[in-house]
Amino acid sequence: MARPETAAPPPEAKPLDDAPGLAARRLAAELIDEVLRAGTALDETYERLAAAAQLEPADAGLARAIATVAFRRLGSIRHAIDARLERGSPRNSGPFEPIMVAAAAQLLFLDVPDHAAVDLAIRHLHEDARSSRYVSLGNAVLRRLARERDAILAALDPLIDAPEWLGERWIRHYGAETAAAIALAHAQEPPLDLTVKADAAGWAEKLDGIVLPTGSVRLRGREGLTTLPGFAEGEWWVQDAAAALPALLLGARPGERIADLCAAPGGKTAQLVAAGAEVTAVDRSGPRLRRLAANLERLGQKAEIVTADAARYEAEPFDGVLLDAPCSATGTIRRHPDVAWTKRPEDIAKLTALQARLLDQAAKLTRPGGRLVYCTCSLEPQEDEAQIAAFLERQPGFARKPIEPAEIGGIAEALTPLGELRTLPHQLAGETPRLSGWAGFYACRLIRL
Image (cartoon, rainbow, N blue to C red; front, side, top):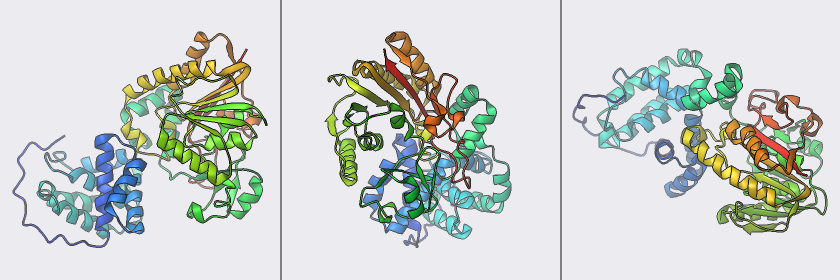
């Protein structure tokens, strides 16, 4: 709620020197503001704004860390700030809100000295005439957050960090207990998983990693990827453990013709090529396909790359088709926390219509006796189980081929009664909370009769 009263005249301006760390806070607040206003992806927004800001790597990294935590805990942050604004956020206050959110993210969830977070936020508020009128208000709220941090954190409800409409969907589909477990998993920094060409145990030892039951390698450390052994040689690539399962379920064999639809950035394409298949990677985005081509080049792999709309792509039927359909991506919130705040309920209805068109085209591209795997990184049954049920009504020439627990490392809890894959973020317990869990993924394997 906005303040109804007219603000006091702005205080006398203070000198706006570039104090150490202030540039990082400026970028963090700008990232938060633009992603929320424009609904753009945080990763892409960061690449653009960081390049324009030309910050030192440490400052750019700090800005990204602040913005990421801000989106991961945005519900908690907004609740804490609003509870200390007796009459709501002030109107016509310019960057007041994103500056306060960035500062609160540091005070509540990052290892940043309180005085640095508060002082730099106040300096930042002074830089805009609209927000400078509320310096005293901002200062008081931030100091209260610092003093009351322990009590604030102890009272948080896990589901507060998901928009209300999304939390309600999870409760309705999965139950309150599982919905809370999903939200708790999303609050953790995600682990880093690798898919290796061969010798998972050997690479786990070299990289201080853990071999997961599914065969992925999960790293304990957070070192820069490009400096790790095996990167330059193309021995592995980054891929969430759950995202690696759909390509495995297709069961590609040497010499088979396989279509990877909506293929970029190429992790699944690399898996299929590594299995010995002749892969055609199809995607409508030229820039994303260039990234795919670069990834394959580093890995020493080759595939036919086609720039086309997969819903209209035509070719001789394939032995296998993998369709990783565009979706709401709510299963990736732990890795991309901005997704929770940039998606809307109406987006799901639009996506389900697109997914249906893609599925019908994928069916045409599957030869008789061939396999079709449909997958999304969504937690929403409307895009997944319901999508497949509707597809099978339209396409009686297809049937499910149930997935067995042994195919996914014996993790039976990740399978539905119909034999479909349904991974949830709180599954896959590890050594620590950060080393536990995986993305929310859905996959169904179909056979053309």
